Image (cartoon, rainbow, N blue to C red; front, side):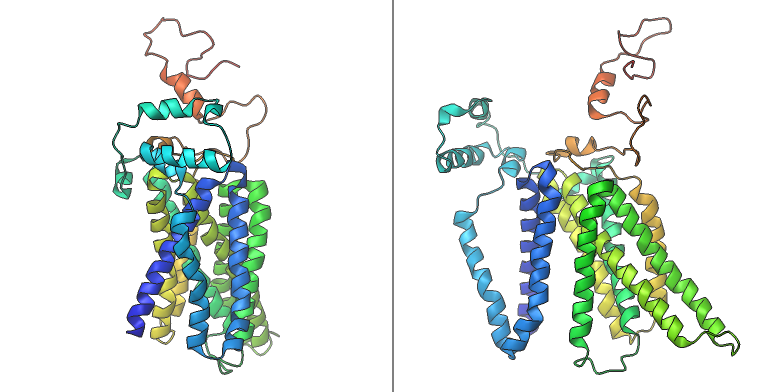
Amino acid sequence: MFSTLRFFEGFCLAGIILTLYALRIELCPPGKRFMITMVASFVAMAGQFLMPGLAALCRDWQVLQALIICPFLLMLLYWSIFPESLRWLMATQQFESAKRLILHFTQKNCMSPESDIKGVMPELEKELSRRPKKVCIVKVVGTRNLWKNIVVLCVNSLTGYGIHHCFARSMMGHEVKVPLLENFYADYYTMASIALVSCLAMCVVVRFLGRRGGLLLFMILTALASLLQLGLLNLIGKYSQHPDSGMSDSVKDKFSIAFSIVGMFASHAVGSLSVFFCAEITPTVIRCGGLGLVLASAGFGMLTAPIIELHNQKGYFLHHIIFACCTLICIICILLLPESRDQNLPENLSNGEHYTRQPLLPHRKGEQPLLLTTSELKDYSGLHDAAAGDALPEGATANGMKAM
């Protein structure tokens, strides 16, 4: 019964995390989405740092479980207090519910219904007769670019969270020479501190390099740390066996700890950025479905950790090699992703298809971009196939770009 209840508890927690993540993304303007997400991550880490102290004060796991669950009872009030996402209601054509929510916002903000400058309500009244149109995540299969982006991010999250355990095991050591309870707090706070530093670094890197550039940088660091740990440490181990080499096992252990810290730092950022990236480029109509796929991939990556533990660390080296190869594949696949910084969230599948890949470096002044933007695509679509010798529209060139 305990295992069954723990399963349903984890099942519900996953739904809470996914829903809150999607709501945060949909409620924030483009320039504030990443900041609000990182604030939520820091709040979660604060709870992670306080949890061992709370456990030490309770001393009984039943009391600890009751204290943890009590705040969740407040979430029962969310049904009547917290509103539904207006963006999702509009995207799925639930215009009747959207109208009631807009009127509710108007009353709460003490605004007059006549202050509708853009004429939203009259347009909404015309569409009330339309039936709601919800979209299943399976519809992604029929897209051209969207499914590719989601698959790439699923592989990234699986690799990031999966290889994170490999680095953690390398840092803690394969053979536990000290009883677990004696160094539990040191290991726990070390891993939590690395995650905290990783989030702080994400704030700086994403600010300057964007989502795709930051994800690429952290994936390269993860791959380098993994390859150096697998190759260089093996070479050091061979040289340390020679009496004249001057190398000892302590040198190998220090290098292993250093590479493990760098790997845990970078792999945590890779997993977190993959989830956030998916939330931004997935259309509103299927955002929870896309986020669910990426979070499920992350969970599958974390699931490989207890599998190795059950086999008494047999196959651990092969486990690390497989994930190291995945990091190299992910580096190439990240280049296929679009950049979503300061972009509006896509609402439907067609909007999600317009997210196309842009070059990593900005264009130099006077340089013609290789890929067309959405506005330029509209201009290009207006050009008809002209026969040889026919005149092109004014201001257009033969390749569909506007003349500079």
